Image 1 (cartoon, rainbow, N blue to C red):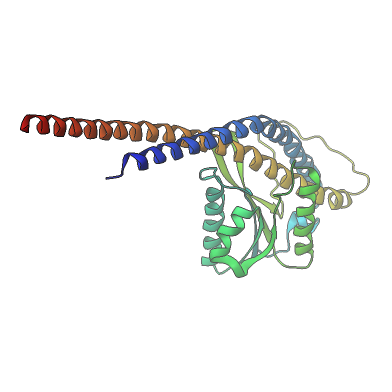
Image 2 (image 1 turned 180 degrees about the horizontal axis):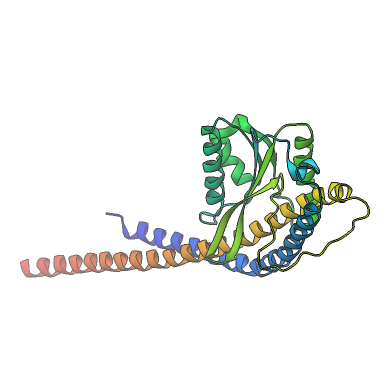
Length: 291
């Protein structure tokens, strides 16, 4: 059995850990509001971009258009753009995204297709390189970025477009975690190359007819690369909010667990100390009676 000194050290260590997790919870809570506001503000813009592109694409001739819209005509080589966090201590936030990407990769490989990875974020890269080290064609860390901006997403989009234009892949799927609430983050897979254009709803009413100047293909040539950056920017903002939500929840659980452990350790310490005092008293009394 541990000595009383060892128990006191253990209790003090647990209390120090509790202070750290409590501080991290408060920091995550303070950053969550701004991150959540940014993610929610980006959603309407990204959705409107999809609507505009769908409207313009509907005016083009079927099967024609830029490669970013119609693809290369093949789906043999798939690029998985996996966006995760730079830090841990956030529960299953990073691992859930990586798990979704890994499942998609294994499913594609079982179909005889080639899979490549582009990792954004240190944690995703560290997990994926264990099994897919030779298939990772790109890795970018945003650890030094204090506040995410569109320029960061644009840099990633340029690297992806460079790989696409050189024929490195046919289909690109974006993986990230969509923020729903502090305790709910949804791992999401979104195909961004070729862009999936949703058909108009049946109850949407008549679709207005437009004449475009310049031609639809020229507009799409300039709009699609920007839309790619917008979708990646949205994913980064969603990830940022999801990370702080997951970290806040995880640190709250850790703080509660540390409190429970402190109470249990204190109870054991008090019982052990009382038992030792009782034993000493019994020995003193027994010695006095013997005299």
